[in-house]
Image (cartoon, rainbow, N blue to C red; front, side, top):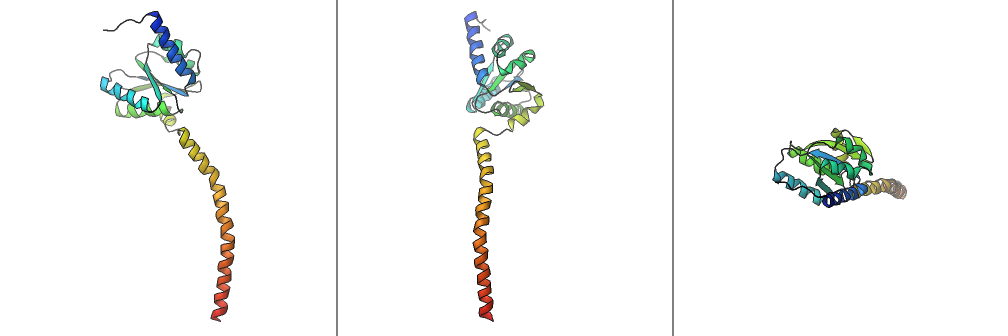
Length: 177
């Protein structure tokens, strides 16, 4: 038995989703028709641990919630039973959660992928899921910045080392003669 929402409850849901959408990096809409309660609970737990806001919202309320955000491009596609996932920590977190779950559960079907106000093809969720997290991106940047300095230090250290080895070889040649 479903209970109808009153106007205040609807406004609260729209305000909550709009607030999350306004600060989110990316959004995924996926159809969950036929998924079991256990599978949805598992999806919610995975999303919570990954810093992803996951919500099943009536499509009319979802359209209102995203209309003044970067995800307004999703409004026309909000049809059918959809779960919305918003990345709160990095652009790829929602894509990773939904992509991983859809691999294990064929009933979870990605319908829309949006990042920075652009609607991507649903097949591009794998590309978005492979984006590095903030910490991984910083690590890659630091490794890239460190490599030339490290190579210079090794090269500078090699010059006196080569001189010492050459002098030792000349000394050994003179002693042997």
